[in-house]
Length: 85
Image (cartoon, rainbow, N blue to C red):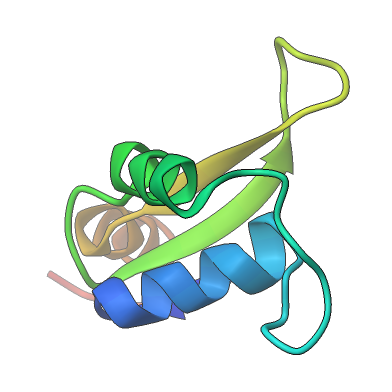
């Protein structure tokens, strides 16, 4: 799980975590345009958010990208008694 605060952090996180490309080693099988399209389609709805790569529930060999937003964290904090509101 990783906190992402902006587009730059999102792209960096996706390259390192989802695509496992570190900028020093590794090449992508996608063209730059295909990569940009995928990143755009997969981006979070808002920042900040927590991002995770999870095993896909529908495609056995794939991973899914999941985002958790501040509203959900706030609800969980209230349920756990961390916030008294």
